[in-house]
Length: 254
Image 1 (cartoon, helix red, strand yellow):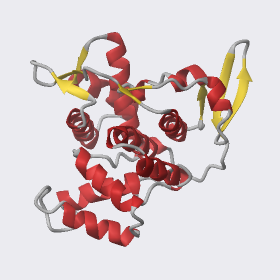
Image 2 (cartoon, rainbow, N blue to C red):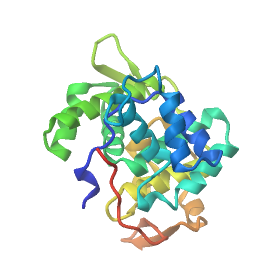
Image 3 (cartoon, rainbow, N blue to C red):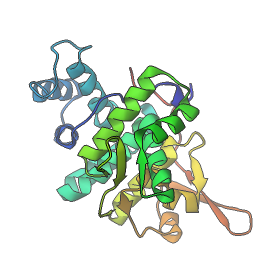
């Protein structure tokens, strides 16, 4: 199954919910304990007392980002958890972003579409972005809802800002610099999201899906990372590929 058949990420997520989820995983919670803990954490924040309620669906999205990740993302998860434990709170957004890209292709595509629009203009409308997402995913009500909720999440996280015009969004005033280690994880997530697990180096290092962040990672540094293979392509191009064996993609529920 192609990664881009199931949407899954259709909830608006607060950043502190992601922090709570990642913190529990970093503390060693089992999947059962993680789910029980996040169910309790979300009480009063999201409505519902059934698994198929808003609270249950929100818990599922959070768990799929940091807990029960798709099979192909399992090699990334322990390094992301270790980076979460070792980094400062200001660096955590990039780690949540990497895990969301790797686990949910719809998140990756919304972020990339927003990034591309912001390279062309100072702001974009939700209608512009939704039109481009429909062209990629086909038109379905859940996609429209998902796109809207992901964009609102990005505003809540400080990656985008509202403008004076309702439904129009701009880039955050400042980009967030990330360390080399976190930049490597972002690159790994982008390759996991790619159907062929490979991208030209220039496209990977300047990928629109990571538009809120800046890094100084170079191709020479990527060559030193054991998770990547680099192949020459053409006269002056390098192709970056994931080295570790790829498990079949296990898609999120919902």
